[in-house]
Image (cartoon, rainbow over all chains, first blue to last red; front, side, top):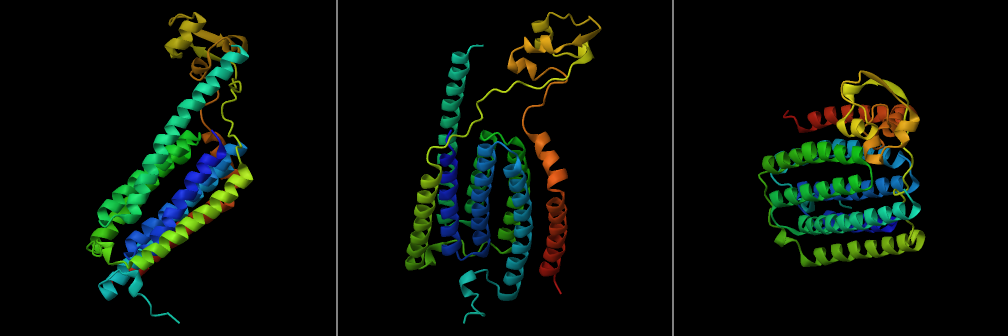
Length: 99
Length: 232
């Protein structure tokens, strides 16, 4: 197997995640698209780890998974707070800090 | 085993893993596409499950079974449940995203496509056809040991002509070398399959400070989530 097939797969996944973040208005769906992006990065890390035949890629992938879990926890708490205050989780309505 | 046989085996392995890769990546990309375009929020979460499971399969295909297992445990086991809770607690409103201006959608598609084209160009330019080598069959490490014959797995006993009631037997390196690789893995004292040992060594020695930092981060995220989400 060549390295690039994994890297290109991850690149497509990353681009789909970016598309999701840009077009979704529902806060939960935006967070899900961020997960897609993080997963693409993980595939890259593991593929490079296998390519260089060491475990550092795997170790960093595990760290990324842990950080993603923390990010989802805090992110969903913020979405819930937003829902409680505004009865809406539409990210396009959040423009209080728009210049 | 001759060189030609080993080579044929490696090629066979490569074809099989390429077919597996093709199936996994088609399923993954289709689900990812549906996830970012579907109007139903719960369906999006279920498509995300498929994407995450497929990427766990990719990790296992790359020989990182530990990361694949962690992916399934943490992502599919915990994060998806969090997402479903988030969907339910916000009443899954805004399910239909048809109201998104088509201008916004086409801009998103443009940005995504451009990003992919730039990345693909850079990747192909940099790595070309670089191969990932996992096929090279290294000899399996073995520490000679004395074991009770009844503890040995049946294939090992049959290959070495040891009867189950032979009592204590001493396994030597010479005996070990006569075994087939699949049988060698099952001998007590043989190197364990996979790279879990190296990952554990790396996390708890070289990366001990990032590891501790991650545990503090998780604690901070836990407390932060409670503080943010609790009612006054």
